Each structure stands twice: as structure tokens, then as C-alpha cells.
Length: 309
Image (cartoon, helix red, strand yellow):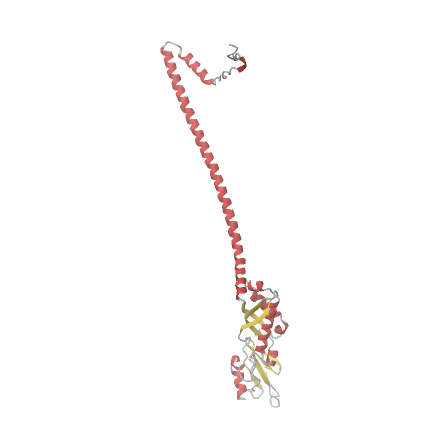
């Protein structure tokens, strides 16, 4: 009776390690009848453990009534629902492309069927072997490159596969695959890593190439615009220079005309008549004379040879 009270009151993490326990369930113990030999109260930490009494599961602290305690005792087992994770389980298999590979995984799991776990002899070893077998099956159905080119989805894929395995989901629930590390031929592992790095760099290389092409297009467009502006500036400067020269020429002509009118007036000529003549000449465009044609060679006398002279 003293041992039963110790099992019923001790921490669940300690009682599952006692002799008679299976690692996830405590040894079978007699439910102590503390109140008048009829009522009993067993503390159950909800979510962490469950209590199995006569095949019935109790998941929270409820009073236990045994009206026939004088004739029959009640026995129970405490089951750990949140055990420690399974660390560094190694699964060896050939990939679908016939490459040897080892996956080392760590799994966080929970018990979802406390009655079946209480009836098992070695539940921890059972879940270990089930996880290893399921991971090996995943290796056989995938290629080496896909497994090595893991971008964060391998652990999720393994977790989903483990939870879909009938032999596991009926008893356990895989909460999370904490890690999944491939090992094997180091040359192949390194090759896979390089392929993965190249695939990760490829989008960056493509983006850099597009940026360089865009930068070249912008530079070319800027150069064309600059050349066009330079041409406009040179044309404007040329136009201003021509206007300045024309203005200077007009000023010189008017100065010459004024001097001529003054000279004509000093000689007794009519200044108005002289000014009109100059203005008429200024309005008329200069006459272009046709060039003197070159005499044709046919009009020249024939050459006289020495004999004819």
C-alpha cells in the first residue's frame, strides 16, 4: 500500500522509470481509498499525463468512487502524454536513384492513445523503430538531389509522412521533426550542397543581369538625350552668331549710307534723292552674273603639222 501511495503521488516523469513501468506508463498500483474506504482522489496533471483505471481513462483530477472497495480493489496506471523527444535516430536506405544515404532525425511526439501505450511492453522502442522505418521509406521514394537540396521543407514532409503512417497515428502524434540531417558519401553530400547553392544563387544572378541590362538601357538613353541637347545648344549658338553678324553688317551698311548721303549733300545734291537710291539698292538682291562660258575646242583652228607648213 505504501508503494501504491508513492506511485500515485510522485511526479509522472519519475514513476514511469520505476521497475514495472515501460518508460511511458507507471507500474500498476492500487488506487488508495482514503475517505471512508470508499472515495479516492487522484491528482492528474491535465495535458501531461492520463490515469488508466480498469481500462477507463481519466485525463483530469476527478474523485474516484468505489462502493465495492471491501470486496474488490481498483488498480490503475499513470501514462505520460508528453514524453521527451527522440534524439538522433538514424535511418539508412538507398534513394530512388540508388544512392546510399543516412538521415539523422530528432522527433518531438505525444501520446494520443493512453490505453494502448499502457498495454505495451516497450512503447519508446516501438516508436523509435516506427520512426526509423518511416524515414527510411521516405529516403527510398525520393532522389538524392531532392533530399540534399532541402530548402526547409524536408522536416515538414517527414512530419506529414510520420503522422500519416497507420502504425504511428493510431498511438502517437508527431508534433514536430526537430532536425533532419543527411549523411553518407561526403563527395555526394558536397556536390548536393553546391547544386543547392547554385540554385539559390541563380535568381540573384538573373536579377543582377536584368539590372545591368536596365542600367545599360538607361545610360544609352541618357547619352542620346545629352547628345540631342548638345546639338540644340550648338544650333542655338550658331543662330545667335549669325544674327549678331547680320546686325553688325547692317550697322556698317547704314554707316556707309549715312556717310555717302552727307558727302552728296556737301556737293549740292539732293540728300533725299540719294537716300532713296541707297534704299532701293538695299532692297534689291544682288544680281548674279552667269560665268563666262569656256570656248569650245571645236572653234579653234586645226593644228598645223610641220609638214604642212
